[in-house]
Length: 504
Ligand SMILES: Nc1ncnc2c1ncn2[C@@H]1O[C@H](COP(=O)(O)OP(=O)(O)OP(=O)(O)O)[C@@H](O)[C@H]1O
Ligand SMILES: [Mg+2]
Image (cartoon, rainbow, N blue to C red; front, side):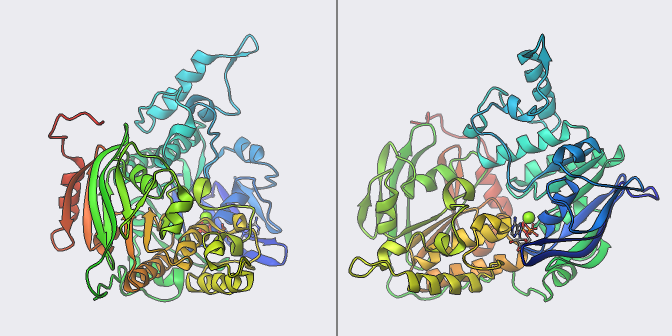
């Protein structure tokens, strides 16, 4: 590590209207160092890095690069100083190809026209940095979230930055993909790149980080080595310790009642012949690798997509495919993988977003119950500790993790019978995760059921009563919570397909 930092945010502050979001924080990044930023949802991590990236300008304090005070008035200015940023919210254009997205703003030209060949070659070279093999002509809109995240990473790496900012790059990645990213980061560290890394996966900190700066409520709390034990980090971060990370409570919920029956459900090219039932009071986990068809299955049950054959029944009532309204009316709640695409109306208020699934069902004599909705929303926001200035704030102004909590809260308010969760705690801090798990317990205690897709094995193992494993669009097996181990799940998820049936 060299003496002089590559970049320092010196005593910076940032306010939005009346709200102080960052107060007098100093943080530096050195060459060959991975500086971690740690803090709860809404602590100010993304706001802080946006000042390094030229998205926001500090209201107080200043920015020093190579010992000189600078003003980063645009993202372009930051890039010119060698700063590349992978933002928490993906910034890809869905209607453009992978190649065009990777090279956006840097399109190679020849005789005044875009040089398609060079474009593809450079994009391929960028993807190769993280061993990603996808046709670069594919439209980004056709990719899943994990792949889009990898494209963002490849794009930032291809800029050859000397300061690389990574805001929750691993939130949507599996263990395997995360390892690939960490290998690249280790190489960059050796070549002297300074990095600033944000993640809610505490185990990643010791693996890839050097030092950790902890923020709480926009204030600097401490700087500690990345080898600091996880429970100490948690205490610094949330101001208290967390005893039970997976507080699953199973209990009697009366006579066994089937609430969801999925029979021989198939969707061309996505999944095939899926049969299972879920009982009241149960948490059913669905594990599998990215691309196993889990999200597609959940979307079909939720009425987002049509299916080709088979049936879905909620409490004995058949549901047609592709009819979201009917699914909601039947008692299905759906927390989707991509909160931006399906979950939230970003310009609408927190109150409206929380109430969206409930207003119709709570209307009396044709009148919408706005007052009741407002108090239910306020109560839920409090329970989930959604950090906001006011419940009338546009939800787009909330931090990423707080938006995720809101999508979850909506379906709990709606008192859905079957809540389908797709990566429910992605981007959620350790403390808020426990609150989400406790609300899952509340759903099952009230006689509801939960189907949870998650790529986080500890979460699947810690919260499920039963686990289904999907592989290549099919059910590869079922494990009881007693038999389930990380190895047992991974063996089912990854072993070679043992039958030669084509997907229908
Ligand atoms: N444009 C904005 N207008 C108003 N408030 C904002 C704006 N951007 C951020 N905030 C507020 O600033 C606070 C910090 O948000 P920030 O996104 O920096 O948190 P974070 O630490 O990155 O959280 P997460 O872990 O959830 O991503 C939040 O309370 C958020 O509501
Ligand atoms: Mg953030």
